Length: 296
Image 1 (cartoon, rainbow, N blue to C red):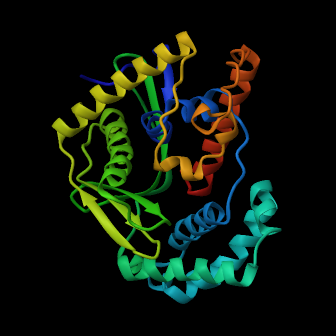
Image 2 (spheres, rainbow, N blue to C red; image 1 turned 180 degrees about the vertical axis):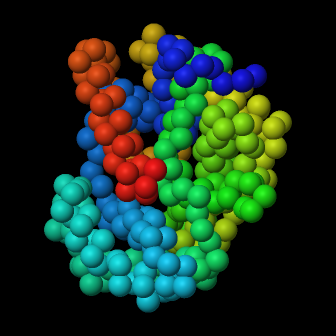
């Protein structure tokens, strides 16, 4: 199957992370994607955002300058800038033992340099926005942390995880998200990425690699299509059932979950055409700024 024409009317839009949300817990998906309930951040989440920023920015330097000392020098200015633009970062900053927290972020950077050598890397794209529309009209879109290209044109999708490596079941869920990114690239650019790479930078740091093929991506496409049908059914019935599991440990919506004694909130009214337009314009603005930043 080929990707649908770019001007085809979209049946809907889904990102790899939101697809993973629905697989994990349909009620989580609803609260996060449809209700758009506010979620507080955490020191770990903000540290992840900060480290991602440094790992993106370090490739602005000449290859020979991409050394640990340079990354460490970039960390605190990046933290200042993050607080200036992010209310969540400012909220978390007020609760921190900042010296200890920054020290933990420096440790994460050190782990990255053990796993990868940025002086030998020249990413094709960073924070790469990708999208494709499938034959059923579903638009897939997302942002890839890093996209590498070998001299022969082969692509590698790289995703940073500032947490520790996870158990096999959760690892397969993370790889599923990378398979969706690979599917998007295949449908949009006609190339099957040669490598999917998860870079875990927590206390137990390691790299997980997987080589997909067309059969993998076709299976992923069929799974995404079935998943979207399940989402559409849940939207039509209003039934987004909770699915208790390990993910509940860090869920922000327990007060509205029957698995924890709460009551499910009423379904919100659909957004108005004006609200949908504003969301679309915000996405386009963010995409334009990202491309401008990287000279695209």
